[in-house]
Structures are given as C-alpha cells and as structure tokens.
Length: 238
Image: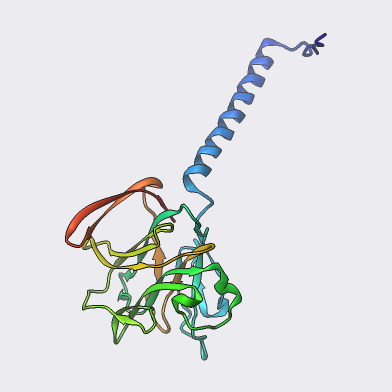
C-alpha cells in the first residue's frame, strides 16, 4: 500500500514561488550540463616542466620565454590539457604574431606523449614521444625527425593550425592565413598525447591558443596536394 505524505498547508502564492524556484534550479542544471558538454573540460594550458623558465598569462592561453633566465633548460616546453587518446580527432590554432613584436621566429608546436613527464631532459625526438613543427631564426621551418628535416622555404605562419587524427596517425600543420598545409607527420600514437608548446629561447613574442566559434563537429578548409578540401567531424581544442 502506497503512503502519501501531504505537504503542509501554504498559501497559493508561496506554492507558486516554490514551483518557480524548483523549475529555475532544474533549468540551471540543464544549462550547465549543455555548457559543460560544449566547452569540454575547460581547455587551458598546464605547466608540466620548466615552470621557472616560462611565463604563462592569467587566462592560461598565452605563453612566452621569461627572457631573464641565465641558464634555461634545453627543452623549456609546456603541455596543454586535456590530452587525446584513441578515437580523437582534434584541431587547434596557435597565434604566432604580435602587433608590437611582429611574427614570432622561434617556437615548437605539436604533440608530446604523456610519458615525457617522467623522462627528464631527453632528446626531443619521435622515439622519445615528441612530434612537432619548429621555427628557427636561422634555419626556418623544420620537423623534429632523426635527423631533423628542414622544410622548403615557407613564410613563417602568423597563425598555425594543428590537425590530429589519432587513429589514422596523422598530424598536420596548416598556415591558416594562406589556407595551405605546411606538412603532415605520420606516426603511431600510443597512450595519451598532449598539445605541446615551446615559445623559443629569448623570443619576446608570445604564442597564444586562439578561441574558435565552433566547438564540436566542426570543419576546416585547407589545401592538400593542390586540392581544396573540407575536413569534418573533429573537435575543437581550446
């Protein structure tokens, strides 16, 4: 037999107010859930190594060399969060141009395996869990292969797009302004990989993660082997 517990007698106005309050609370929960789903887990930069040698903005999306370090480490890099695992297709953009300093000349942008946190200061090679495009003031653009691969003459990008298809083992770098693919790296990823950023020793220009309007299921346009294509169905990392 069901037992019912009657509500205490209240005025109709108070009952209406209680009902409205409950509805507002329910709507707030739904809204927060949708917002969390769209924004993921609050994409910010997280310092993994070399904390004393890099300067991160209050938003967690801008980083540069501190410039006042007497003996900076060989690899003063930073990792983004969250990381990516099997099934991930993601795209993010890095701003490399500053109105006061100009186009940034020295940087690394790419991926690093989660295992690099436990390796210490090891050579930044694919065998050690590093895959990135680098810009060097003297040499221009190059890939961290073994040995390093110097790329044909390319203008340094003002905005660099990074596209990852984890399961396909594809990591592409795109000059966003020119809508041109710079280079694609093929690799076999295992475990969790994280976005990697190195602002370059002594380079005054900051690098920043750029926000995009589309968050999930977006598409990017880029020139692949001379053919314009849309790449759909990735998640925006920011």
